Every structure is written in structure tokens, then in C-alpha cells.
Image (cartoon, helix red, strand yellow):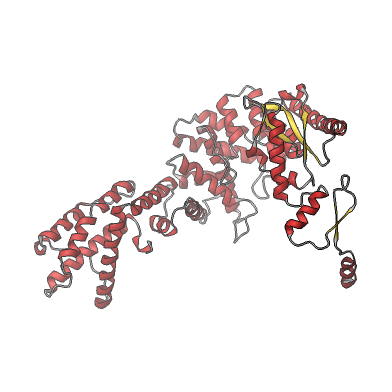
Length: 522
């Protein structure tokens, strides 16, 4: 049957195409076309913009002109998320201005945006003061005609009125009850099989927030715990049932209507952030606490039931959750004992301990995050090599400091000396079939060797202050360069030769204690 279908399709092929259904209903002759531009031009004469980029640019350009006529402007950041959809709905875009009824302008701007833009595919505007405008733009697929445009605008306003009336109903109905009163209904919503209900999750988040808040500078622990308890309550409201993309946002509004503190409301609103690498972080300390509690609870739970990401599969977005934890900690410069916090999360589920793969998973995501920040992969590997700690901020600081050090003159010079040191030691240790101890006898040193030995012997390794350690290594650059300029390592006297090899082993020991320089390429 397939060959019959193909043959039938081939019968429809020809040198004609269709123009705009209303404006140019006759076939368009494509005989003798010489290029794609020729095809575009002939279709354009039939009121069809073949190129979606052309439609995209036409929509933006004409919509801006129309908006300016009402002292408004487009919010292009928001428009970018659905402009491709709009451009795919029309062949000949013609923007028309509509008006939102005054009664609906009391609704939250996020709700208006979701209703008008996300659901109706209209273009929302901001007024001269940057506030959500009562004007909006709908795209007609017809040539401009005053009488017809008026009918089109009225029809779209009528459809929008019905949508906004539904939103208004949910807005009023949901606020008839206190936000906290929705909590019991969360017990009927399963978080995931084996991980309890959403109500259970809210309780765990409250406990986690209480554990995290003391490590968050200026966070109000009481407000953070309260926000964590209420953060998921809006999931069972009528509004979020109709507009799931507004979860958290509506919870913040309903918390305010219920008389909750502003810190609690703001934390509820932002606790899903960041939802991706381009998303903003929560803006307040309490919101950061709740966001961490939410993401950590999710990570601990799914790892605890062995529902871990495998290969490219990550159905529960655990990589995104881990990246969110990392961004909040690193960008917020937070010193958090993550291992202990994860254990608090595990206890909330009744797990005896945190899954052994979870911390390594988070550290691996940190490596990916740092590489995404344009940090060299070998620098990340050197800074985080064999690090089994849980201080994510310290790890990121180490990597950033090492990257800066290696890009500076002292770092570049030191690496040249490191390569000579490691090369000589590797060759000599291969001959001796043993590693040289980092021990030397100062009595056998020349003045040049003493100038290198003294800073080496007094250098104290402190992993908590990478900048201080790198500065100390940078100070070794000149003594190392002078050593190789004036000293011959393979002296005829075996005692002096071994003593000098021991000095080189000291350099290696001190450098490797700061970072794994063997992983630096080049």
C-alpha cells in the first residue's frame, strides 16, 4: 500500500503553489524559478511570507510601531518564549490593538501574562511606567481593512474576556480561604510512589529549611520555615489547577492575602527558582533557603529509591535540581555543610543514610557548571581532583582562584618550572624504581638552593585559603627559575644529586597539596 500512497503523492507535485487563502486564492505559478529568493518573491506577491525569520521580524517591527502609538512598548524578553509559535500561525502578519477591560486589570500581572500571552498567543505590552498595560496586540492573518479589523479585534476581545473571567473567578474563590487551609488537601496528592504525599514533602521542607537557615546570612529562620511549610499549598487551588505554570507565584499572592509576612510571601513566590541555567536566583535569603530545601528534598528522595539519572535520561530533572542547589550556594557564596543537610533530608524520608552516589553526583554537576562558565576543563579537574568534601562554595572558589592564577604571569611561569620538576623526577624515579622523598639536608645546599628551600619549608598548606596558597606558590616562581638557571641537578656527587632531587620532590609535594597540577595541559 505504501507505494500506492507515494505514487498518489507524486501525482500532486507540480509547478504551482498556493497563495494566501483569502487575499490571493489563485495558484501561484512557479515555472522557471531560478532561486529560493525567486520562490520567496513570487509567494510574497501572493501575500505569503515563506521565510519564518521574515515573519518574525515583521511581527516585531510592526508590533513596536503599533505599541508606540499608544505610548507602550513590547516586553521582548517575555515575547521571545512564544514568538516562534506566533510566527508559525500566520502567513501575512498584521498586528491589531486590543483592550483589556478595566475590571480585569486588578488581577496579578503574571496571571494576565499567562492568560493573554501563553494561552491566547497575544502580545502583551508595558506602559510608559513599565507597568502591565491594558493594551495588547493580536495578529491578524489578513490585509488591513478598517471595518474588518474592528470585527477581528472585537472577536478576540470577546474570547479574552471569557478567559479572564475564568481567571477572575479562581482568583476570588481561592482567596476566600486562608492559604494554610489548603495544606490538608496536599495529603491526597502523591509526590511520587514511595516518597509520600505533597503534604509529607511540605513537612520535610519545613524541617530542612530550619536546618539550612542558620547557614544563610541574614535569613529569618522562622519566616523561612513558615514559607517552606506553605510553599506547595497553592498546588490544590483552582487557579494553579487551571494555570499550573503559576505555581509558587499564586502561592505568594495568596499568602499576602492571608496576612503572612512579606518575607514568607516572597520566599513562596521564588522557591522554584532557578528552574534552568538562564533563570534568576531567588532574591531573598528566605527564598534561597526554601529553594534549597525543595531541591535537596527532591534529590535525596529520588536517589533514595534509586531513581537516578542514567545516561541522557533524567525524567525527574535531578540534574537541574542539583544545578539549582549549586547555583544558589556558589552565587550566594554560602558555606553550607551539605553532607549534614542531606542527612537531615534522608532522615525526613526515614532513610538510614544518604545514598552514596548523591554527593558525587552533585560534585560532578559542579564540574559541569564550572565548565559552562568558560573555565578550562583541565583547570577544573586540577582544582577538584579527588575532592570528596561537601563545601561546594569552597570547591568553586578553588577552581576560580586557580584559573585566575594560571592566567597570570606568576602562574604561567610556575607551570614552566613545574614541567621541568615533574619531568626530571619522573625520569630519575623510573631509573631508581622508587619515588624520591621530599627531604633534603640544608647543609648540602648552595645559596641558590637555600633561597628555594626556605620558602618551601615554611609553606603551610591550608585548603581553606586557596588564594593564600596560590600566592605562596607564585612566590616560588623566581627561586625555581634561578635554581634551574644556576644548579645542575645531576651532580657527580651522589649525595648532592639525591639532595637536589629531594628538593624537587618538596616542590612537587607542596604544589600537589594545593591542586593536582598533573592535570594541567600544555
